[in-house]
Length: 382
Image: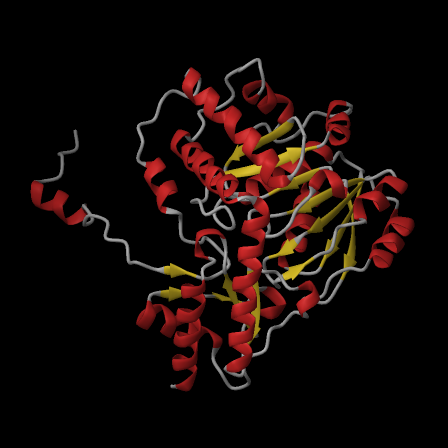
């Protein structure tokens, strides 16, 4: 039998107590968490089938419908990060051979392509330069050419800071009898969204951006039309964990055990959504817009240029072009080291070319904008 380690050996492998640095997270996410949400994380867990927890789940569903402006009965939180909710949308409605048309205008459009391909979709791509949005006519031309079962678009492209207009896209999809799937990871809780009015069939998001909650419990919703496609599948959903035909039995009236939910993460999501509802969507959307405009004006005053035209610019995430001769990574490292302030670097085609500045949820405040502008100005001046 192997001998247990000595006390001295144990002490060598035991790390010190956590001492988390006080970062101001103004990158593409996660964002800083609302204090009330942090408090909710410390509450004692109950069982995942406890009547109290089942009530929490019901309240999350009601609050998510409000945040998304939808009446979809199948609205819930996936136990996982935003990428899990993203995969859930595709896993449930894509069958082998289904034509899936993806509008790619950044990094996360490519991720949709990758996921849809893995589920056997016949994936077609509409391409747009990183920093631009699709016009309605471009989407119509794509639908006419490819006749897809599903059109997938990113409402808020986190890699570029572009907001894709969606006001008439759902109606267009109805003309071509296809489902509309959208990514609202960087828009939910900070940018106007009207899923039902826009005719959106599938949407997903995350908890750690506009909702001001830690990552780990991710919003998902499916329209009755999308649910019909799920129920008429010829093949079973190939992802057991994300199969909505199983998950709805846990989130619905049957309350059939599916998995052990992350209890405290759901407490946190519920509290974050309560904060959203108390502020009110109109006021929250306006707050994000005003603080973004303050940032855009300040960036211009210190000689920096936004990558995206203001018409399509996200209030929650701004991409700023790196001036010629400036090391983007070195500036981000200095902001972290000297100011405890995080900004994001560019992804994919924009790597080294932009910084990504997030003003999301609890972090969308004027004092954060002014601090960032001052710090950025000083670091660039050096």
